[in-house]
Image 1 (cartoon, rainbow, N blue to C red):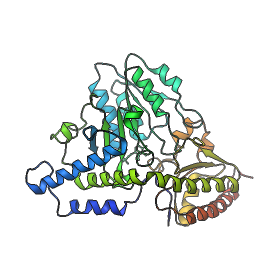
Image 2 (cartoon, protein in one colour):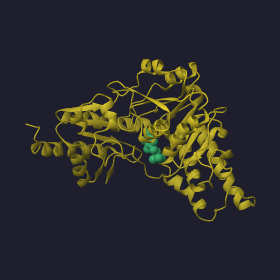
Image 3 (spheres, rainbow, N blue to C red):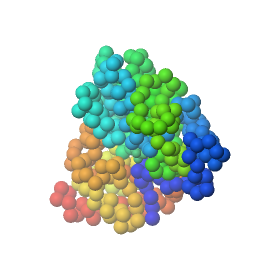
Image 4 (cartoon, rainbow, N blue to C red):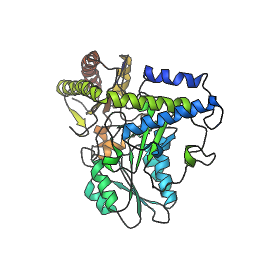
Length: 383
Ligand SMILES: *Cc1c(COP(=O)(O)O)cnc(C)c1O
């Protein structure tokens, strides 16, 4: 099998699993209890908090563990909306966000909040002029993703943070695709809130975190116990949190090497597919893009048909994001980038990671052109 869908999820790193195992077995204490069994669990959670804080240059007190990226996004947006209603009711985001952000914003719209969905250019970069123009007296939050999960485009985060700060507006970024892949410094970048998720960088599924800068006014999403200093009720997912911490530590150490290796593989597949398959377009920013992501549109062919045929050859890829791949609508990200629906239907995403090798590139660049040729033979649009 060749796995090329690391933006959907990643396998667990063996070293992460080893750290987690004791907390799935004998170290089962509740971190809020007082005996030493429990205190060992507490210490493990706090160690993970430090490991994660280091990854993004935050203070450990600014880290709140969640059940993943989706909860972190919900928490950031609803939490800011509810805690700052007295200041205003406008939220600014972009048209290309993950559904965890988009659908949270739509939910708030139905409850009286106003949401501005900023357009992007053909590369998927948010229009900074439109951003500045859309800020009003009532704006309380700007939420723009760090890097896009479908096409990989990286946003001008520092500039967005600067604009937010100038207008006294909080800035949240969904960094689920960037965390663990790119160096992130929340201090240097001026980010107020940041979402991340363990399973996108070799940690376990069902655990993530929200960074909340000291002093930011945010309401909790869950009511209950006093865990996470009253900001996220519920007994901690100790094994998950330990795994997240370890994954963060490994990512920090190995990120630079991994970038070099993975970028080379991605670039090589990109070069080969673009030269071997006629009528293909590259999606996303040609340079300013996640080094592991290759998104293309193959004209006159359905993305789904290519995926099924790739799967027959043991190749796992995606037509866009995992969350929308069961719907027949073309990707909202590609449409926002101005790609016509008939072309967007032919989208294909390969996302690389730790366990890919050169042979994977060989195989895909061998197999896909043949699949496309076969499919085009039966396509009514191709001649
Ligand atoms: C995967 C992903 C999410 C959702 O994270 P989960 O931990 O799966 O809930 C949110 N945003 C982006 C950009 C993602 O890629």
